[in-house]
Amino acid sequence: MGTSSLAALASMGLFGILVMIVVGILVAALVLSVSFRLVVGYMPSYVRAIGALVLTWIAVAIAMVVVGMVTHGAAGGLLSLIVNFLVGAAVVNYLLLAQNGSQIGYGKACMVQLVYSVIGIVLGAIILGIMAVFFGSMLAHA
Image 1 (cartoon, one colour):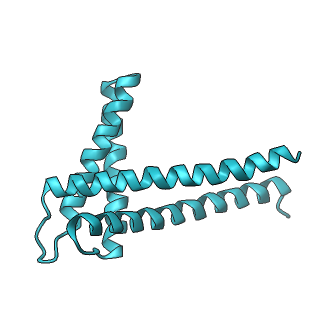
Image 2 (tube, one colour):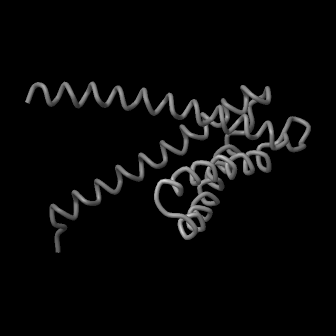
């Protein structure tokens, strides 16, 4: 029995989503490593940065379930940003260690998370601008 064309298109779409997730994790880990380098002074292991990033996403997802049960509306959105920042800083503090093997401290971890967030926002704005120009030019010629 053959595969239908819709099933083939769906599997290609899922493969594309998987590739985007993997590339997103790799780029986000690189941005986290660079922000750690800017604040602490040395580049951590790339594998540890990937682990910190994935653990942060898991911890934030669990925390968002709790925040979603407690709040609703705009207050929940602001609280989710704050929780994301604080949980990310805690994971950075525990997993990305200083050169001597000790923790960097929660204050420096908050600075790493702030620099990471700013770099992420700037990269997101650049990608959004490129996509707007690309798709805008496609629509202009249609």
